[in-house]
Length: 482
Image (cartoon, rainbow, N blue to C red; front, side, top):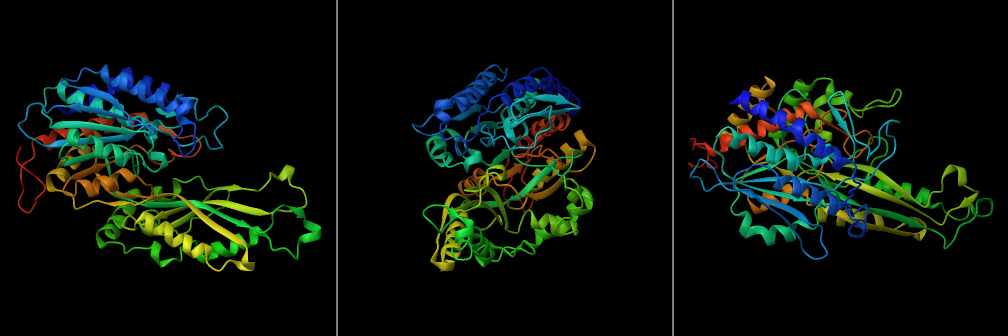
């Protein structure tokens, strides 16, 4: 079975999936948060129509597929494949998204966000790994099982187009499609990372997100800096002062207690194990400039920093002219876009309110200080892995990578997982992905590691097959007889 699955998925990738993702990369299908005119521009429409056409072309028995639309909202692609070879009433839900992050600067001279290039097994371009490949890999996994005559449970797929904007349209679709989705007991999400490209990686937690714009205004219009400096307070200095309430600028530690959460012992131990598995990769996967050093050299602590502790990033700025255009003017205001990653168990909405209260209170010099939140997402922490699933993960990883599976938390945010965790609290989750060292999602030179993705697709097929044949184990309430 393993050899046939691997060969089938590899051939499928070469013949159909790589060409499809290559064309997908060419389309600047930026998420609505970055392209407010997404409906007029039509890029999201193009990629979802292309994906629907591809799905419909697949020789999967019983496959039904459609683009579902709610007026004024981004569309979703929904597909359904009936169970085959099993009497189980279980349902597997496969998830992915087609919207993309914006361009970002710093791409290699011969690359670009909308310029696909396959080089050394890596397919460069925006969105291929994060995570335009998901819909294609999902159908390829199901198709590979059917080609080998192997059983699988009923499978449904939900591919959204506003994940990079916080999945704000998704709850409406979950409500609309609930009768068609049914009772899900196994969720597969292909929108996460991998610690290396040598084994199957499972994501056990995801951070949340609280984001918004912090603005400090001191004047109605800019004035000559020689005349005003020393009298009119600098909006930039006030902004720095206010940020010091939120973060210790010397260490990067977030100071607000409301943004912290206890780290479960299981996750702390998992970080220690993962640090041993990955070794120097934990720190060396980042392209540090010059002699820049990491915030900590303790690998386990570094993993916990990026998965269970809050961290602030300033990801944008307004009201700062370019250096070439900067005259001697005391500017009227400064605005920064803040992105606060949250521990998995901290509520995103509550965190944004805490940030707003902290940043706006008692402004220095009675300046106008406002924090306008625009994204709030709660993270996700997996329930204990069922024994059938752990066996299936290890067997698949051994079969296709010749190494046991590994698990770790991820620092990114997939709001959908938190939504599903609440909707299907007894479901088991396989959250995985291809975003390994240097793949650089959201940044320049993003790439999809094609050889790894081929094996990952075979792993997904193998685990779906194991799900169809699972049996109850002592002390394992999540496993049911088919």
